[in-house]
Length: 106
Image (cartoon, rainbow, N blue to C red):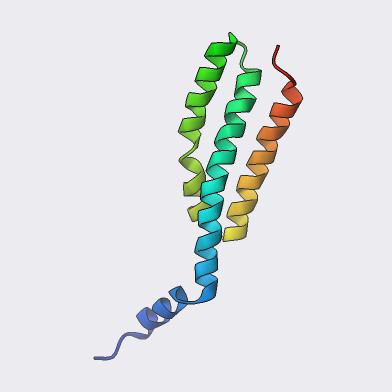
């Protein structure tokens, strides 16, 4: 029984090196991006929230845990692997900018 052409083409596309590179870039972006974005969000919020230091650190860490699953979802839903990487890098730079502008803790 012959395999329909669309299914055959789809299977051959998944076996190519471009498909594997696409998935590898997205997976690395998801893994490293999640850590970077969550850590930078926690650090930026801990320095900028107007509350006692212990409460600011606790709240910012909890909010970082809420944001963490969004990064892998973004990495695999973006239009392309480089767009996913660019989005994560842009968000990381933005959060680092907030962290840097906030200055040392009081």
